[in-house]
Length: 330
Image 1 (cartoon, one colour):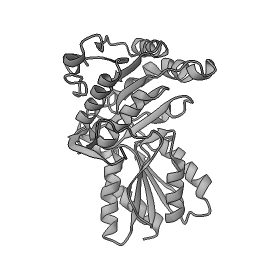
Image 2: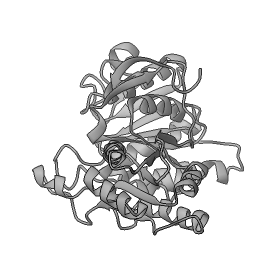
Image 3: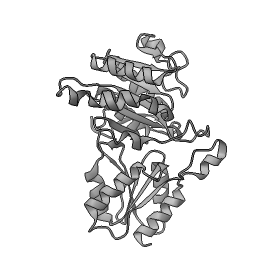
């Protein structure tokens, strides 16, 4: 089935749950591991009802030890299982990094291609719930620096479902980032047999005056900015990479070569954020097509405060529109 074939409208939460359910029905090797994912259905409801269908052997409630769980998942994966590990908040991903970066990501290389580690780490990234410095960080740049990992960050229910299914079927370790601020977003979900390609960006909106590359919660903000700019006569093309590692460089380069300008926006801090990699790639590949320097937008370089104050840290659609105007010379 081609990309774009859809069934009913779902929110992001149910799209993620459905992807896991359908893959567990398809492949008995798929096992879920995580804290409070059993009868409680997960803190954010992303495994709701799955223990009733598949039982506690395949939906395993686990103790609070992310390091132990990550090593368990690696062991299961290299022995033929397809574990899906939920790390409740991305802030705790540091506790899994030895298992992910030094073991899972290196298994295929160190075994000469004979052994893989087909595991998925699902983790809730970003702010949006106003719960402070330890539960709202965006740390994807840490992960994209590790050869052997794949890193996905979906921004729509359709992409969340189709790409999570692809991640579970992938022969190598994948970190699947679920943006907390988008969990309630509604949209069409792909049919059960539709699996989206890892490593292929989506052009969310066409335009010829400026390119906006946005990830996660910045995708809807970029689309809102583009709609406003269109009323001013500036047509912005909005690209959602969807997969950070591997990055779909050709789609981004083709767009920037056409528009002559680029704005990159993400939720993570601007300093050393993944947007720097995108901006550097554009500068290398499109230097002679650029009419203005690439603009990067990210959050303030500060811990995330609790409560409503967090809203002041992140770029808005107005910020994205202002940067696009400047790049487009409007």
